[in-house]
Length: 231
Image 1 (cartoon, rainbow, N blue to C red):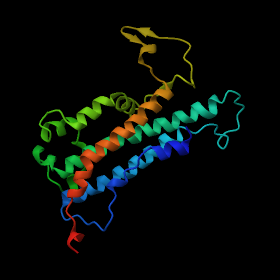
Image 2 (image 1 turned 90 degrees about the horizontal axis):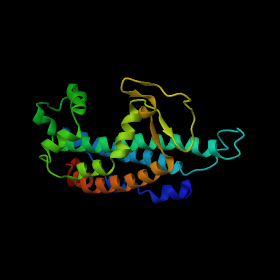
Image 3 (image 1 turned 90 degrees about the vertical axis):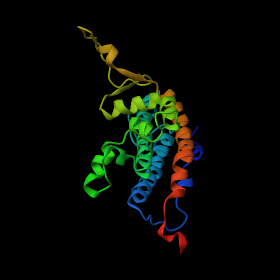
Image 4 (image 1 turned 180 degrees about the vertical axis):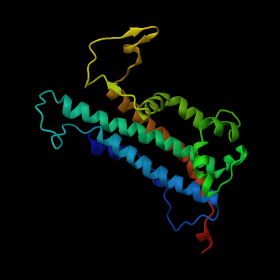
């Protein structure tokens, strides 16, 4: 598959774009709509990065002697996929924020929507609180989604905490020796991935989060109060 073909196959979030002028009338709807727009932009970036991972032979970037194409393909593919993982994980975080603001769940932990509280409100938003406060701990689509895509979310968290993830397809750095000491084994602390498997999982992730956006964000989008709706 080429990068162009992949980009066409990955569905954008156009169903969340506003067709007319929209000016929300409440603070909650304003913050929610902003994050829906953030979701659209973020998934567009993730989609682009994932599509670019299908590109081969990066002659426009490097001129190194690379007879087996490992450097021009596997090395740069790794960078696009690592970036895609982070952006897709951010999409999920933004979706949680949309629920957090739309349904004013922060009120239930004694926070109010004020300029000086925005940072605290965002910091307090997480999947466990949303499950408890909105879904009442019951089976719900965000839990199901998180469980189905646990490997991608775990990998994203490792990358965000600056842990290098080793690509089994192309080893940039080899550790010749292993250190073992009192419950520590350096070989066991490394996290390996196979790039082709990550690529396949991200394709599935994209389809899953687009469907989740249709199930969760589209009804929220359509319910936002609009100053211009009666004009």
